[in-house]
Structure formats: C-alpha cells, structure tokens
Length: 80
Image (cartoon, rainbow, N blue to C red; front, side, top):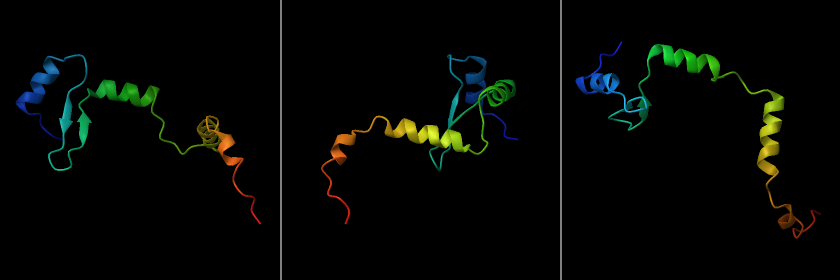
C-alpha cells in the first residue's frame, strides 16, 4: 500500500470535477487516483479484458476498411 502525499490528500478532499492525476517521476506515465468503489464500478460495468472474439476482430477489420478509398487500387498492375 502507498500512502498519499499531503497534496494528493488535498486533491481528493477538494475534487475539481475529475479524479486527481499522478505522474510517475521516472517514466512520466500518467495515472488517475480513484476511490476503490469507483474503480470497482468502472471495472464491473465497462471494462472487459477478455481476449477478442473472432466476430469482434472481424467487426474491427470491417470498420477499418469500410472508409478506404478503393479506387486507388484500380491503377495497380496485375500480379503475374
């Protein structure tokens, strides 16, 4: 467990609308400080870290290519 700094405790006590952000000093990665109940609710309601199904992968591929300009491929030479 990590103890909060005074600055972090003040940010939690006086929220400015969004959860406090924390920067890892070495990697400069940004993190968000959430209450456990908020984290559990978000994890339960929205987050799904299971492997993608074949249908999800196909839908993603379709979304990616449906906006392509296929006319540019008409001028390509035929394969021998």
